[in-house]
Length: 307
View 1 (cartoon, one colour):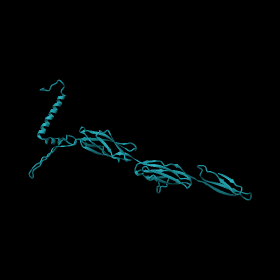
View 2 (cartoon, helix red, strand yellow):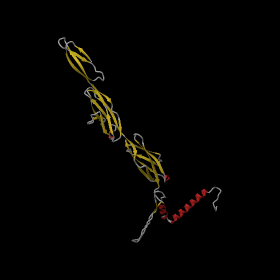
View 3 (cartoon, one colour):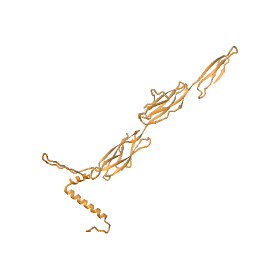
View 4 (cartoon, one colour):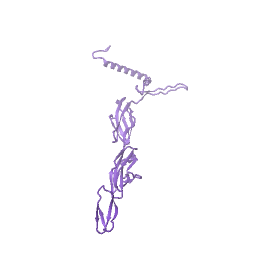
């Protein structure tokens, strides 16, 4: 800042404030002409500046329902005011009512993901200063559906798969036979679909279901699929004529073999309802099968009695 006396009772104070020198400065002025006491005056010179960002807003990644906080700061003379804005669905910035502090916090929803938030600083001097950041709302995937199920041989089966996360996770299947597929519905749900061949009867297949949406680590689930044989009726109840008050007994049979779902008692019932001819033929078949197995265990050169 310079002072120039114009020799006509006036003077000029001039200068260009350097960056960062904004503020108020006190200057003492004296005027004298050799007569009496010189006149004096205190002059306050104030330099102003437009806002300059000192803390920029940072991008945020939060889960749905979590609190998102954006913070920004600027310096200027006079001190700036601030307001926060958010982009609407058209991408245009709109003022956020009541958001006039250097920090803005709110509970994030999935609909907020992808929108930009910016702080606008102004003090009436020069241009406004702005700093913007993007909010991303994400939730890591999890698989919540059961990890086991069953199909019946020869019947098209469907087992629901449910995963949560935001964005909706994609579902994939690995380690599965060709007849088993996973249909991804694109909304975090899917369906294991297939028709098990007879060769898979009684097997328990272990396959892996993966849910991924780009957030942290993928969710995986080892799924146990049991293949069962469908029951079929081999002996139907017969029409029966009885007198009032008499006991009625109806019998039916199925071709299930012993196991967790069909105990030996079922096999006994199955055998009893077979026709006599069928039981005789099956018995002969079982005897022949046992004899064949016995012959396979006899070493070469050794003859069975009677051979």
